[in-house]
Image (cartoon, rainbow, N blue to C red):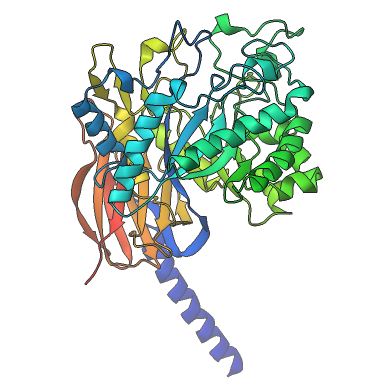
Length: 496
């Protein structure tokens, strides 16, 4: 009798499970996906925008470079771009990156000029702050030392390789006075980053006697790991002493997360508790290059971030520059890699508005949201509409939540509303340029039973963030077909 009941129970369980599995797995026409809005992986600080003004000129008086091109635009064109970046119907970015270039001080102890070489960048950001605040939000400003003035290096020329230890106080004051200026002019400055790709020692000849300006490099100085740790500690103290305890210090920006760990930067921070404890967030550029063995190889790895979080579980990480690629779906897929593989809390792409002729030799990362022409016109690029798919989904204060996608061609990103008024949202990418994809997305923990969708496709006359309808959950899932080379965003529809 006992054996018979046990057999009956096992048979019932098997049949129940088998029936469930049939419903989930045996439709081989669909790619199985899952989004669990109740499973929060980490806080999300938002997506950003970067205006680059002065990046390469070696003589500012003769060549007052404006790579962002705002100086060429009329009032109408400027306002259109500001609306598209910061407006209610635009990208709605929550972060702006501002460079601190080498032209703010001529000599040690000299007066600071924070305005001459930053006028267009400041105008862009000021308008962005005003627009963002008008819709009830605010920006976080992230500022990076692009390169120090020549006198701070041993070589005493622009892009000198080596830091002059006798100029330490001058370097610290250079940061702090810029923060003071931004504060006094109501720029919501949040973080100061020490350097731009300063780990890349091979950008100079071995003797350091040339800045290699002729090769088209942007501003830089070599930053050994020991110098990074020392300046983190000292700058934190100087900012506190100056009344700017609310402005955080970051470790600067290696070229990618692979270098951050494998070149030793992460471990140097891990070994120095004083530097690590004075670090506000950990930062790196997030450029991806998948060819192993080349100089520029880089993957989306969290190894360095994970190491630091063993001591600082609270530590957030930001991608502070990354390429727009070929402005195709892989651009958004790389962001999915940064979010779920590198485990970051924010992403800022490189130079969102560009004036192509002002980059020596052509920008190797030429993708963007806008290009500005010498005649004062501008063009909205495909990168804009692709970026819009994910920026609007992942607003500041939301949470990255768990996802599953059983196909490498169709990655998925999802953000939960968390404690914000933003709606749960998920983004699905079809990287295939040959095949449409049927997907079945099982959704749990959502705030709604209906989702409104928007789509961008790559073809020349394709969809550009086009509304494609409202999808209702059926048996807890959304089933639909993804066009080739497309990105589709689903927003929970608020139920009254």
